Image (cartoon, rainbow, N blue to C red; front, side, top):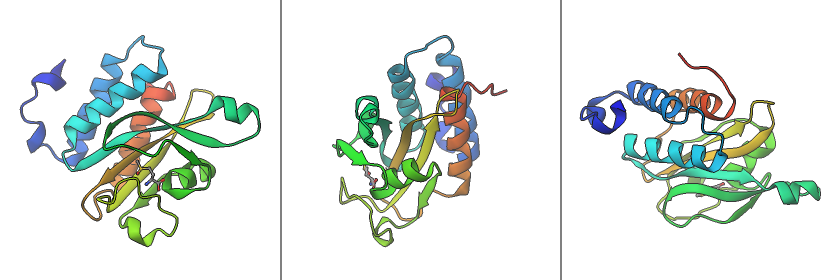
Length: 173
Ligand code: SME
């Protein structure tokens, strides 16, 4: 696997890093149906590629609660400081992404009125909805940074592409 031996990762542009992560994720996960294994692998690859991210992980749609009519996210595989366990749809940045099914790019979390501060060091954040092959929302991907303005449209586009490739059954060439 090229990723583990790629000493030049630190020298790559953001776009090149995403290309590498997407290629490696698709290769490593070929034939692996387990969603937790897929999420954990995505977290590991992104965490190694992007030094400035201190929290990288997933909040998963709680299927049991969903069957009772309650829309709630529960924390899934992540790397970073202790994350909040549960987030209702519509609450915080994660809940906004889940409720609207759209990516949230937040350059300054302090300017986002409903931001949930799991770690006071967070200054910017991105949250991307994750859909399965049938188009159903199964989770949101969340990343936090200590710097302001870490995430932009390039991150949004590439993370959406990664989530589609890994969880949506898309073929990436
Ligand atoms: N800040 C998020 C909560 C999750 S933590 O950042 C890990 C939010 O507002 O939804």
